[in-house]
Image: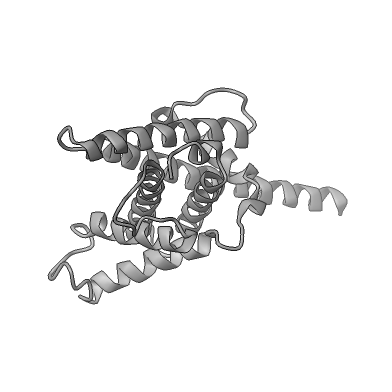
Length: 217
């Protein structure tokens, strides 16, 4: 009986690992594509674009460090080369005690993505009349980023934005875009939950990071 029980548990474990790999692969591919998109959005050489470049450089340093530290890999992983294994281990090993009173959890991110997706389908996205799910993803990512900043009590709503404000909003936009993309494609399933765990860990770790603390506020 013990042998059969052990064998069943092993099969359950294999199934769980396989499912985690699939979710991590989906999120890793989406994350890399969206990260590349965000780095191509900067327009002309203005003072704002220079500040934004500094902000994004600090976010990149942060991402490379946390993927190295939180996955316990001990090696540098360029963001655009991040693997399914790195994303899976990051979600697996991230210390969720970093979720503090004013922080974000996966439930917040999934609920916002679901709500905005449903608003589009119901024709309630008033700023984009006649919008489709496909055409509105960028705008919904922006709305999601604003909701993240508000929840985290980041100062993106101020008229005088600092390097830290730009960095906060850039990371929030990256996560917001990711959640919109995953929810649009997979709905309210395990993929969205995994993306929510990944995104919330990034946001909460960024909030207490040295990279953020060193930026002008």
